Image 1 (tube, rainbow, N blue to C red):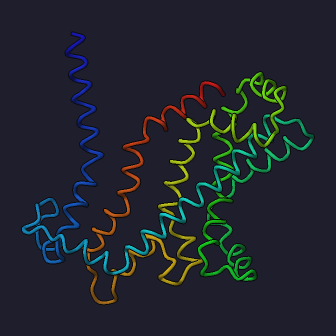
Image 2 (image 1 turned 90 degrees about the horizontal axis):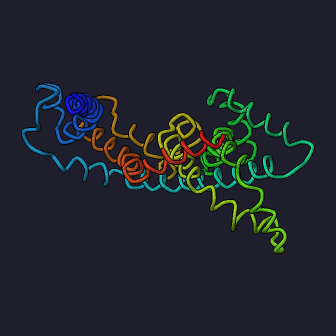
Image 3 (image 1 turned 60 degrees about the vertical axis):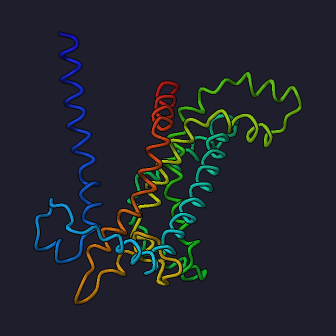
Length: 273
């Protein structure tokens, strides 16, 4: 009976996995069709001819630039966010100062602010300091909005780090800065992996801020660059499908290689918190 139960469980899990993977497979087949096949044939039919030229077309159409912009903007924003959040969490949880709790509360208030409710004030501020149509406006915005959730994830882990390690380091003459970078930061590697993945998903898929603050093709990211293949009179849907496949590929690879780290980080933070 136990084997039958496991067999049924695996069948159910396999069906759920197939249901979740099917949209990606469908999108991949969609990207290999032309407009005639997409609108005249069955949406579930295989392409009569695999049109790999759709990928060549979108890459030559500027997707390479958008892809690179997405990579470096996402990476820089993640590095700054995780570093600042780690430093803030270390100061709040491991150092004694009067304003630690009010500062933590201030960061947590950021979780209650709708992400896109500050577009007009942000646009006005960036316009005054000449950061409109500048990728650093996107990096600053991503960092500011991701700090609260990143700090919240780190809090549970930092609160239970053994203080004996810090005391031993101080006795050996270790400075605060060196202790943070050489001891504390490496100890939080599991939970940092979780925050990196969460930040990556948000930064990579974000659309509204880039569409609002960036107008030059040289600085657009993939989410906004897709619009270039939507014309007034005709839209190349196969090219759009190819662009979407290229845009989701980094997220899929990140989950494929770092999913265990994400689960480990969440579990460690939950148990220790």
